[in-house]
Amino acid sequence: MRNDDWKKVSRLVSKKSLWMVHFCTGCGAMEMPPVMTSRYDMERFGIAPMATPRQADVLLITGYLSIKTLKRVVQVYEQMRDPKYVIGFGSCTINGGMYWDSYNTIKDLSKYIPVDLYIAGCMPRPEAIMDAFLKLMEMIEKGEAIGWKKYHKYYDQYKRNQRMAFSYRLDEVQDIKEDDAK
Amino acid sequence: MMAKELFPDAQEIRKGRIRIEVEPEKVGEIVKKLKDNGYDHFVMLSCIDWINDGQFELVYHMWSYEYREHVMISTRIPRDGGSMVTLRDLFPQIETYEREIHEMFGVDFIGNPRLGEFILEGWPHMPPMRKDFDTEKFVKDFYYKIPEVKEE
Image (cartoon, rainbow over all chains, first blue to last red; front, top):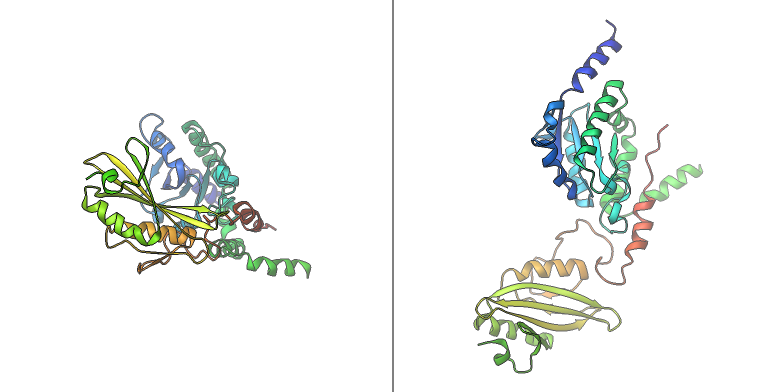
């Protein structure tokens, strides 16, 4: 078998065993218990909660993130081993949602860490979460969930955005504009 | 003794709600007096920004389980460079409220040694709960201007 074929096989197998670290921020954490427990029972798809990021494949960002939480999220994300996937829950991770004018929550998660899949809604229902997991499995099998590769490739850009957010200043933006002008 | 008996000038908003307006220097004395007379629960310390008056209003909320009565001690300090004496010796939990108000409004509490960073980390701008801090403008100038990650 060629190397590509092995990759396919490995993706096919790994999609059936997703361990997730549920980093509970915001209100999305409330939607997880019904998904985990007997009512919707996500274990039938091979998804299990995992206590440590080092053994997890999926990072769920369940809602709004303040800058302070983002620091911890980045730390958790960098501790996870490749391949790793990120699911953004609800409108807060997409554009800030109802916190769009808050001084302390980020508005677009994909500026700071790569997001493979967003779930719309405020908050999404357990059905939507199950649907997102199935979609993520499909993406993994097809090799479309490549957020972790993007993080390697555009590491400098992600780091730049994170530094800006952590310092609450845009000082580095000026440099980028100058670079574009050149 | 109930608050109304201790302070005849106090205003009774409705049953069980007493409001006392005093000078900043007298707050410590009144809180102490109430504490010694059955008002042993310090509920919270809040701050209101009266930007048009150029003042901050500090409200000390106290509750008595014995009389089931809520007393608010209100005092006003100047908005610019205003300061207040800490009351952390009377109730230790006041320290936390003072730290929060210091961070969110910039009020200085003299005698509180822990007025450092509290909830915000590395916040370089004006205290965000002040009314002259334009949240919407800040969001538009900051969060929306963080560039997207460009993919080649």
